[in-house]
Each structure stands twice: as structure tokens, then as C-alpha cells.
Length: 228
Ligand SMILES: Nc1ncnc2c1ncn2[C@@H]1O[C@H](COP(=O)(O)OP(=O)(O)O)[C@@H](O)[C@H]1O
Ligand SMILES: [Mg+2]
Image (tube, rainbow, N blue to C red):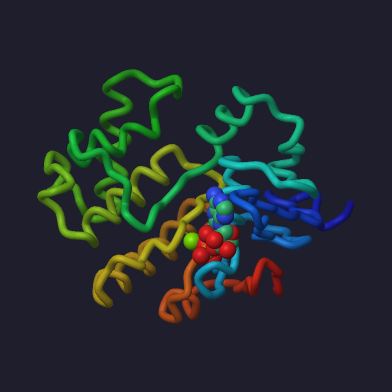
């Protein structure tokens, strides 16, 4: 069997052209990339090099202009809208630069969002969300609202929300960009530990050298071209 048979993501010659205004932008150019289970991978590169575009395509939030992306053995371009949604909910998690917590929900309710649509009772959902908050060291803030938490604490809630349903792959788009050095370091080691404990693959876009040196693998984008 080929080595790609156990890969969770295979991108083949993936290109993305945005057509906004007069001049089209080629954000990704013929990207080949294979991701294996349980790895912590940095997608590095300067601002505008195509990192977010790559994460959005692999995360099924957008589609390539040309090329194919295989996710967990399924060709993504043949999936219907509902199937993409189901795949995202079951197998993927997302961590954002601005944390993206819902301000009207407290910490545990924000984490519970990832469990809706899963076959669980209300009590099971609450218990799993609380257990996940404990894993990120925030059980004592479960009933606090985002505005009552520091940036680092909000991102820990973000990580709990991204991992509570035990996804196979987590996309993290510049997760430490809005954090001070102390909180960034905490967030990095947390992702590292959880990825190894749960066996989740993390694809982390960043230009933060502190983050990159703690990763298992680095791929670099330059003007839409990927070097691995
Ligand atoms: N929705 C969009 N419409 C048009 N151009 C876009 C869009 N999103 C990103 N781009 C352009 O694509 C290129 C890559 O952007 P992006 O993937 O956001 O890079 P990065 O995350 O590395 O900063 C940039 O030139 C950016 O301006
Ligand atoms: Mg970006």
C-alpha cells in the first residue's frame, strides 16, 4: 500500500485564485501536501503568503480553483454541502486568532457548541465540556463569560471547544498572534500535550518562531508556493 493510504489529508496540485476586482490573486499555486495522523505541523510564511487560504481549503470552508483535496480518504470536491458540514462537525476542529467565543455564552456553553448534533444527552454534553475545560486548566472559570477572561484564558476555552468532540484534525489560524509571550508559551505547550494525548493532528498557521520550534514539522508558504 502507498504511504498516502494512512494519510488524513492529501492535497494534490491545489491552486486557489481569488477573483475580486480587476486583477485576480493566485493565493495558492499547485500545492502538494500530505498530513499524517498525530502530528503537530506549522504552516509558516509571511503575511499574504496563503496560510489562511490553505487552512480554509483543508477545513472545507472553501474550495480549490483546481486540484484535489482528499480528507480521511474522501475526495472533498464530490461532497455535497450537508456531507461537508457533517465531516466538519465530526472530524474537524478550529482555533482562531481572535478566539471567536460567543460573548453571550459562558465558557462551558461555548465548549458545548462543538457537541451539538452529536448523539449525546444534555448531561453528557455538560460533563464532557466540563472535563475538557479541566484538561485545559479552566474548570474554575467554567461559568465565566468571555469578557471576564484574559486573552490566554479565552484561547484555552477556544482550544477546549476545538477538541471536546475528539476531532482527527484541528486547524489553528495564528492562535498566538493576539497573546503576550507568557500566554503564547502556555497555549503552545497545551496544544502539544493535547495533540499527543488525544492523537489529534494540528495544522497551525503562524509566523511565530516560538511556536514553530515546538512543532514536529514545518511547511513554508512563499507567495502561494509551498516548500516542505
Ligand atoms: N477572499 C479573498 N478575496 C480576494 N483575495 C483574497 C481573499 N482572501 C485572501 N486573499 C488574498 O490571497 C493572498 C493570500 O491570503 P491569505 O491566505 O489570507 O494569506 P496569509 O494567511 O498567509 O496572510 C493575499 O494576497 C490576500 O490578499
Ligand atoms: Mg492569515
